[in-house]
Structure formats: structure tokens, C-alpha cells
Length: 295
Image (cartoon, rainbow, N blue to C red; front, side, top):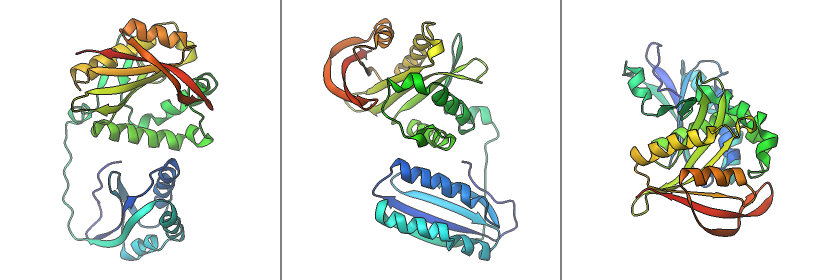
């Protein structure tokens, strides 16, 4: 989502919903996406801004006061606020503003700005944090590989496989990267028109630990080609040199011999066995615990 600045003559109007959440579950995030889609179809709509953190802020902008008030009192919005009072919100405030002055700035060197999110070119592809415009690549990956990946992943609801959820996941990936909570590197083909593999460096812990957890997946058709090793090698180098993470932990089910081979080749050492460690495809599974220590 871009920073909003109105091309219309002043004044224009804004409706602000600021909230603190008791629960930020998938249902709430999908609801927020639906509201973003609904608001775009309302008369007088100019644009919107949304930020999520300790406090969520959703700002919508309108050409006239009457159109802003119509959104403020829209039946769907009022109904969702009522549901939220029972399910999600600790507290919220809904406000109507008149915008009297609009000052804006946009940096002209987009390439420099974009470099805030790493893009790593390897021999056979590109490792990057996806942009929201690339949600169809993630959508194709999880849907085309659904049958293959099911045996290695948690049970998923049907909503997980929607394009809207993919866009939501990408926004969360980008926010987690900026907030130093995790890095999701997707490995794309050289021309960036197809996603080949997925790597997730999650639960970054700083201080005396400087560590994270690693998870990954690959298209069934790309197995045995060294693609996973190529993607992980580049990602691990970035984690070590740029983010100064020097302990990367990964686990795999004992029957997943391909995953075992990938981690062994990368230098991960076995550290133990965890009984009933993760619930995979509806069943609690033992996992081999490994770590790559770069200290």
C-alpha cells in the first residue's frame, strides 16, 4: 500500500479507525482485506492507508464530507465493528477528519528505495522478498504443489489457498522483514515469472542468542537439481553477513531423507530428537533437530 496524497482540491475528508486487538487471527486479517476491497467501490473514495502493529490504523479518504459520513455509517462496517467488539478488539476509535493541508514527498530514485528489500541473483534464479504485485506467483506455487506439499506441512484451510491470503501473507512477510522478525526469501526463475522454492527464516532472536529457525519447500519437479541448496546457500550467506544471524536452526522428520541430505550438505549438525515436535498434516511427528553455527 502506498502513502496517500490527494490530487483533489482541498479540503477533502478522512475516516480513521484506530484499534488495539486482543486477537490478530487469520479471520481478522481476511476481514480487513475484505473491507479494503469494499471501500474501493464506495462513491467519493479517494484512497486508503493501513498499518498494523501494536495499534492498527486504517485511514480512508473521501472527496466530500457526505461521502465520508456515508462510509463512517456503512452497514457492513458497523456490523463488523460489532462483531469485532466480541471477537478482536480491546478498544477502537472511529473518527471523521477534514483535511485542510496536504504536503507530500516521494523519493525519485526508486531503485535505491527498493534495495531496502534484498534481491539476490544466483546462478539459476533470483532470491527475494516478494512484492505484493507478485502474489500470483505465490498463489500458483501453493496451489500447483498442494498435493505434494501436504505431507510435509500443517493442515491448511481452503482460505489459505486464495489469492487474497497470498497477498496478505506477502504484506506480513515485508512487515516482518522491516521489523527484524523474520525473512521469507522466495526463489524465482531468472526472469521472475515462476516460483521454484520457498525459504523462511523465522523467529529471529537478538541479544545473546542471534539465532533464527529455518523452514523451506520446493516444487516437486525441481527436486534433485540442487535448487534448494542454491537458494539456501544464498539466503544463509545474507543472514550471516547482512543480518549477523550466526545460529540457524532447522528440523526435519526422520523419513524426509531429501531434507536431511540438503541440511547435511549445508553443514547443519544434528543436535537431538524432539518427540511429537510438530503437527504435520494432522499428526504429531517426531523431528530431528539440527543447527548451523557460524560463530
